[in-house]
Length: 568
Image (cartoon, rainbow, N blue to C red; front, top):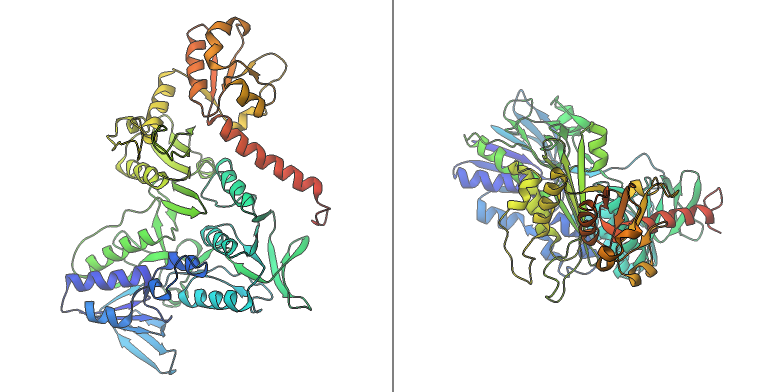
């Protein structure tokens, strides 16, 4: 059996290695148009920033090591330019010599990946304008940074690559501005969670410019790059990174007549088979099933690509493996913050018409009496009335990755939100609390379902009446209250509430908040058992403060800006 693999990195290289482990006699030929067959794509920004010092650390396998270990004929700088499914041949071009020939196959695996989305901009070829997808891209940026020592950079886009580059360039002393067409970074997050990311970046000196759609690039007379924006003053910088997103690289598949899906991706079945016999496709270029929504989706992540490649290899070698889909579990390091998500967010749930509820909590990463505990913000969505877990977002420091993985596993295993309380999770003071944050989610949902408390959310605060028809209560200490509080909320600290309960009018709903939601929950239980109709603020004052500061910052920018977008 002769297997040709088009593309290396996560999908192609994994498929080749798995095929060899299953079939020692197979002839495996891999064509990769770049100069690198298998590299750490996710580590590229950290080499530019100097966190990864050795260029060789980016290369997981070389053509020579791959050939020695797996007996795979790896040919880098070779591009497959055409596929003939009927004749079962591919046309190959040696990018070094220019030689062109046809190569036959019994089985074909397509792993072309995705390419940076590049609208029809002017000025893309200007010196100092980059995209970041391959090792070659990384080396070009690294050489530019070392040689030119840029003082300023504009990053177009607000996804993973842009934020990782923002951190690494900032650590090199570069003044970074992120230009984003929308009103937030990281679309995987809801706006009320993304504000924590925004606040951190501003604290680190990174400028965020929302509502700024890049329309082109140009070079000023003095050599300064101009990032052109729709209806706004251009941004000046020494370098520009275009990280607007990625597009499935499927021109080859399209020309061969393979059936395509959303955004031009390659349509495959659960066996990773395309519409053409004996042709498989894996990785960022393929359309898959979203495990939460059940709808077609694109998930450009290394984990799904590796799993898909393994399944395609199994089936090529006579097996019957199935890929069920992905739910987009992801994690990002941003300075000293960790941002993680899995499943869908509120925006997606609303677009799909899903009936859902949510909880927001602020637990510590481990026992507070053990040094180093860090607060994390956890947001979990679940379907009503089934309690099916829909998605989770967590922002914090230590322990975020562990909790998102537990929640992702629970989702895929079909656990309900309430069943999270029963998970038997490891505990020791340096690592967790006896009631782990994931367990706490389950306890909260159980209490909500049992009617032990009701809640209100950040988006409800502005709509709460301030005419005396409801009671707005802050149960933090007097010192906490003096440092900042929600307008209209009176302060009765929790430890004095039993003695001062008579100060609260009966017959009026009571909306209660504290720092994290715990003291206000206890207050709600006191009040409810004394005849009050109580609502607990989801997320607490810390959550409110982060969102309120973001809203105030946006208002300030609007007040300081001329109609053309220039700041006063």
